[in-house]
Image 1: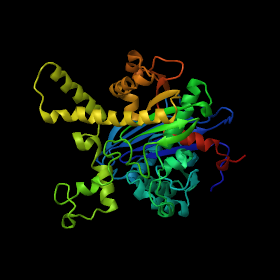
Image 2: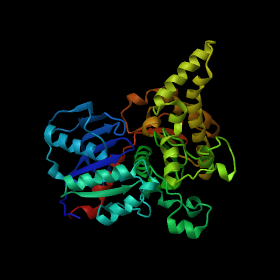
Image 3: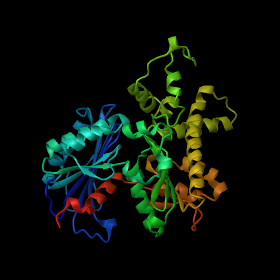
Image 4: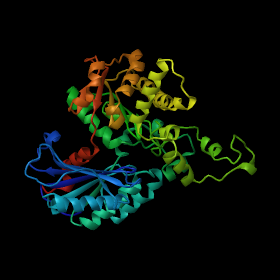
Length: 449
């Protein structure tokens, strides 16, 4: 690990399945007693549609940041971006060419890594740790590969900066054994690391701290049910500031359905899905060898609400659902195929409610707040409304006016419920890049005393 000064730039890199989010922070004048202001955001960049070119590039300086000038980019198509590595290379070129920032000031690069296996603390990327993460790629096929390619690019382009892996699985290492254990032979399970790991941990860590600050309660006194609802969706029951249970398991494919993920299904479904007979059959002659890679591809990339509706955009699903419902209310004839929008919405809602009820019982009914987060959780007025309407039976109530105004409220945590004494309903604008930067800035291993 390279020696670093007391201050410097931290680059946080978040590789999604088809996206790359990058934030640049400055660690300066650190006050460890006030960790909320330990880093200063300088700029953000997003690259979307990496797997469906042309990729779309955006680059923006932080609104409060002074002293840096350069050209901002907004949704510029970049045909030269073909994968995560070329996306990161384009960012570095842009940073050097269009922004007055010396990339040599970057001392640490934080990488969000979805699956950490048995690693539960941040690690500096070496040959050994790189190959360990590489071996875990099959357990997070939509993400680990992208993160690894960006790590390679960082080591090549920024050789004097430390690349550090932050694992989404780390937050859930507190889950008790009876929750994380799978009901299979334990000698095989332990040898192969087969258990529930859970994901979106960086998001949950950020949300826990943000809600703790908002409610003015120590994290160790908080019980929360958090919904990280995006293209990849999960939920987490947090008891006394620690992960008690979460919906994803050995891999991110389990639990809630997502844009292209199936969510939890009967394990036998994949065999029947690929059966030559086209129907359920146990005849050996009709069997098909389904390899792990095939099953992973089907359940990770060819399922979810995209398989039901033809779109990965949940906002589009809600829009079409409301249009069809309005026509139906007027007495218009609705084609059977048009029911797919309502089906996708209701399916997602149903799975959320199933876990919400289970977590409420696991927490003994002592829940300080329901928290909505991530793209859908932060933007979908309709989904929040539907979830809380069903949760009225356990004491949660939505304020329709506050719920409708979330987009215009710039706070990190926003109250949208009617209760101020327990049973709060909150929206939290989660920020995984900021969480990594904060953890990096506070870690004494990475800075000179």
